[in-house]
Length: 156
Image (cartoon, rainbow, N blue to C red; front, top):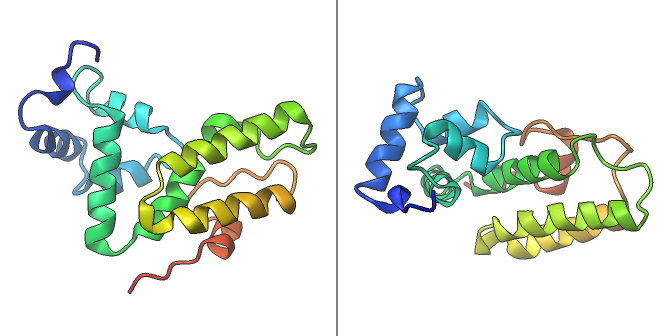
């Protein structure tokens, strides 16, 4: 995407046209059908030459805010980051190498966490490091039982 095509024309219209072409009525439905795909993978599927990952995320945030499901979006993004950084699940031992992998996953999650949820995300990251989940834990959706315990839905 170095040629800048992702930023030309009506980005939102193009994004939603691609989502509808794939049979979804929302970007959220499209993304939730691929809960472990990275934002880059979602963007590539929608248009490798003219859709950027940040555009996908921006659309997801807008939809989550409208539907009052930002917490679910935040959990979903953690699923995506853990899937990318820890494809075999939570490490059995947090040695230096694995601690770095976990830290990178949590840091990336933090960069894709809306300001309204940043403090909670920081606390969850700390909690996961202090009391790690079972070895091999790999959430596959925002409805994962442990994730729901750590970050329950609160929006009304």
